[in-house]
Length: 415
Image (cartoon, rainbow, N blue to C red; front, side, top):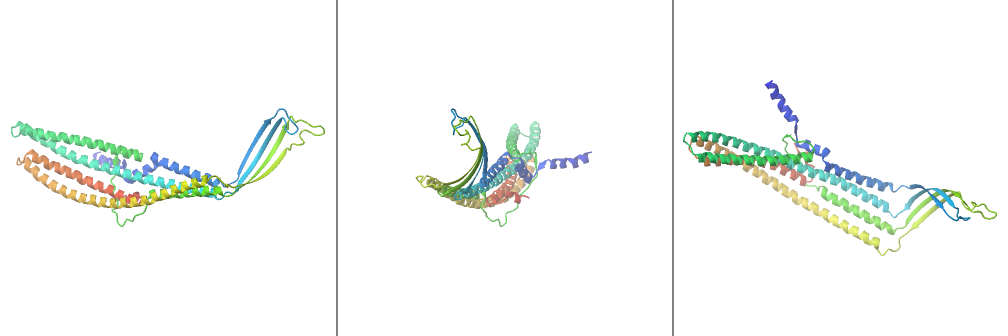
């Protein structure tokens, strides 16, 4: 039975854990903010579809009822009319075409915004994921130290009872033990916070995590990410809106055909004529409508000018966004190299602190050094261990930031 439990329990724990890629995939399915961005893209697509359908003719039906008192030969007392009307713009100076292009650019921008938000969300998940792993390692290191101090407290109490040590020695160890308990509880709270954030972002309850790492960057080229592309798409949309305003100064040509049927009651009669002889029962009216704006005190011109200034502003912001990204890309590379050097230094410090602690521990138990020297060596070992583990996970975070500012999809580099 014990053998079966030893086999099944690890499998159960592993099955309940999540990898970094799984958390990102779950966020794509469950995160409400990502869903909101997707719905906004659908709204932009519907706007585009509506604008495209505006090229088609329109067909309307309707009716009117009129009651007139008193009635005359040409004005019956009661008139009921039903009609059907078809109309279509034959020429609008390119206004509809420009508006359609504008809507397409806005739809493209909405898709880019969704992608940008997902990448930002992924980066956030990566940060919380490695923060969880980092805090778990720190807690584990301090638990080992606390266990060792507790053992020394029990040992020192025996020596105190035998008159071989003082109560001061016990109190100093107890103070260090209590401080460690506080450090662990504080780290547990930070861990709980990171786990809750990870659960909120991914939409799943996070219990255990599988350990993933990022590929080491090699010959990673720079490419602009979504921010500059979004600004460019918005600039092009403004440009097309300006063209649509320009079309307002072009001739506008529309054709309209209306067919109506009428029914009259309470019609006054004239001598020798039937009352409804002047009133047609059925009528078809074809209308060709032409219009051209000759003067509006430059109202539309100024509106177009405003849009073009906004377009130029968006273009400028797009250029700046690329420059800013390049700067962040360089800094991310430097940050990554710095943290990697920090990890090597922390590894060396851990090796040195471990050797010192081993030597001091043997001397302390032999009574050759005091507990101040022992606790100092123990603290240095624990802190060096925590700093080394922290540097390892910070390096993974720095790699994700580097890929992000390189304009890459960071999910592709997770292993």
